[in-house]
Image (cartoon, rainbow, N blue to C red; front, side, top):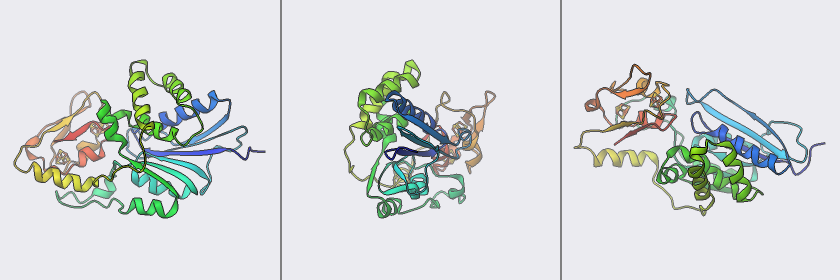
Length: 282
Ligand code: SF4
Ligand code: SF4
């Protein structure tokens, strides 16, 4: 029979955000404690920006790898709309930890006019709070950026997760060191500790779309500067395909590059939709 104290942690996000590495690290922490661990996850979205999830169940005896709706102790969401999509899996007395930075899917921004609003869901925070007791929101992406690498967002989120799990910081840090490349170990360590030290509730941030309009207004008279970090680009072509002004192309090395910055209207689609955070529009 399955142990009654089995813990369920659901980790969700979109392709490229590092959901699977985060769940592997959690699994390593649990195994280090001597628990049985079972996981069930979706792979293959890293080039498509699609939904990625990982069910992690651990305890003294775990029989099934999947979490039933209404039974997850924790939902760790790398993206707000994904938090909403998966919220029905969480116990009303459970915890949701959510990164506030949005990844707006292509289907939600089919109106490509510069001032068009997206069809991204609104009222996410209220909807989560109406279903679940403990909702912890914070901007993990900016925290990772301030540490020097946006891609550390998944480790920052693990730091926040560590506050609601039974394992010590040392157990987490040992698992992180085992799981990441040695050259990124120190940065991951700092990212974990930064996430672990976040106090909730955090100050409210403006919504992404408000920031976009402010950014456009402030930069109205300046030529746009589109920054593509080619060492992060994996050549999925999403940015090239969504750009309404054909500003971007794929080069001979199958990486995105800027062809016509002067026609850019700062719609931000390329920045929002890049699954690897490789694009910034200034
Ligand atoms: S380069 Fe990016 S921000 Fe500029 S128009 Fe194209 S998609 Fe929009
Ligand atoms: S920069 Fe463009 S092609 Fe490269 S990963 Fe991002 S969306 Fe894909």
